[in-house]
Structure formats: C-alpha cells, structure tokens
Image (cartoon, rainbow, N blue to C red):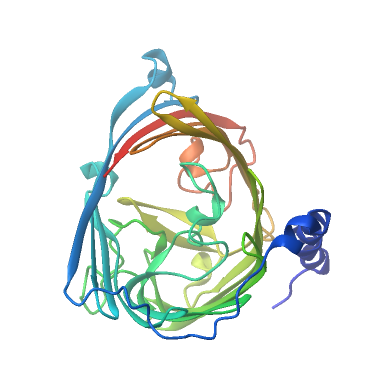
Length: 398
C-alpha cells in the first residue's frame, strides 16, 4: 500500500502546522488556561441512588429548493416533515443509559435507532460504553457546523455509530479512546443477509458487510478549548457472494480550536478498502443509509475545513446566531475517477428550544447535492457541474 508523499505532507501542514501557528498567535489565552491535574479519581458523590429517567426529543420540518430538480424549482421548492425523535436517558449510581430513536418518512428509511448504549463510569475521567456507540474517529461529536455535515459523513466517517464497546479516558491534557466494533447495526440475521439500508450511519452494504473493527483515537488539549488529535481504524470486510474476508483501514489528523467566538475544525484523512470480490467490483464499495445506497470509491483522501462564528444577540427569543462556512474535498487516486467537492454556507439561529438552520449547500459529484446519485462518490461524472440546494431546517427540541 502506497500513500503519496505530497498528500502526507499536505495533511501535516493542514491539520498540524497551520493550527499550531494559529494557537501560537493566541498565546495569551493559553497562558490563562489551566487544566487541573486529576488526583481524585472517585466517582462524583452526586450520582443518584435511584434510577432517574429523562425523556426528550425533537420535531423538525424542512424546506428545500434544489437547483437540479427542474420541476421542484418551478413550484418554488418543497416544505415537509424532516424527522421526529425520542430520547431516553437514565442515570443510576455508576451506570448511564442513553437511546435515541428516530422517525422519518417511509422513503427516507422509516424509523430506526440512531444510537443507544449503556455506560459504566469507573470514575470521573474514565468510562466505557457498550451498544450502538459512536466511532471514535476524527473530530467528534461532529466535524462540521451545518445541517448537512461534511463529506466524511457520506463516506461513513463522521457521526458514525456501530455495535461494540468504547473505552474512554482523560488524563490531564490527554484524551484516549480505544474501541472494538463487531459490526454495523444489524437488523437482518440470516446466514448471507445484506445490510438493511434503514439506518442513520452510512455503513458498508450490498455485496459486503463491515465486521471486526478496531479504533484508536488520541487527542492533546493545548488548552481547554483547543485540541489536536490523531485517529486510526482497521477492520474486516466480509464479501457475501464469495464468503471471503477483505480488509479496510483509515487514518486521520484533526484539530478543533476555539478562539473566543470563532471555532475552527480542520481534518485530513485517508481510507482504503481491500475487497475480496470479483475484479469488476474491487474499485468501489456500496454504502447505505436512510433507505437507499450508492457507490463510493474504495480509497480516497478527504480534507475538511470548517469555520463558525457565534454572535450572542437579543432579538426576541433569539439568543445567538452562528455563522459558518464548511468546505470538504474528496480526492480519488483511482485512474479515471473524478473528485468530489462540497461547500455549505449558512447560519444557525438559536432561540432556546427552537433551532433553525439556514443553509446554502453546493456540491460537485455529491449524491445529496446534485443529480449524480449512484456514482457521485465513486467514479464521478466527468461532465458534472456545481449544483446547489437552499435549505431551511426548523426544529423544536424538548
């Protein structure tokens, strides 16, 4: 396996040297910052002796106007239900329970569990999650600020949840995550069953299934609101027709920095699938979510740069405005494959429980932001042009 030297150097400059330069210019805030040394590793005494249940959720509606949908443009866009969700959280002594179940339209995957796990707290700095757990890879919880996320989400590397266990620990300025995931969320238990596309996370589907995945993530806190990290993932890819096991791996450098009202998230990553399949299928892998699937290049570099500026305001119920610019680029090294780009410019309007995202999202060879659905993230369309979608998402969270 070969990775071009120029790509490696670009990743280091983009996600390490540039952020450290920005941090150096903000040395005053670093001097003021103190991260306490954790000497007391006992569990906090405020943990409840009896189970405490909290129920929450959200109801969201969505308006969109997509430039490539000519008939939709004629009627001025569409406005309808986005999602209804229920959250349940339980705290009891050293145990926490969390679950989130979502309801979408039938054609959008219907209803499914987004995440759900049991957490055991060893002490205030160490815990372990078991269940449908977020993969510790890259900037988490999100590597973006907008409603659409960034390209890594659509390739299965942002806000992704799998069935397994994650061990998390913080030691002063260091944060560690070590995880093992048996497989993606499994809904079909037949001997040769494929992956059901009704799910939140983009998972391997079609002729293959993702299995036996290991993750390691380490972050260093330069200051309480500034961190830099490295992530790695390796796992198997089971090919259903042949019954043979392939492999997959990914690595990322990432930073999450806050300078007053400005937040900067930078990430560079590379992933690769080595499929044990027939030759005509070895350059692409199928991913599925929200009730449908598409093809993705079996290897690619993904670079993201996300900036957000939070402005507190007093405009009736509106408490703050978050302006953001999020860009992501997917470079596919396979001969003849066309690269993918995505950009989202927008604003989040925070009015307490009512949160609204106003986005102008543009894409080139991006399945959700253009006409090239099946092959946008794989071979791509050499004649593809930028397409855009104006989107307003209104949600009430309770």
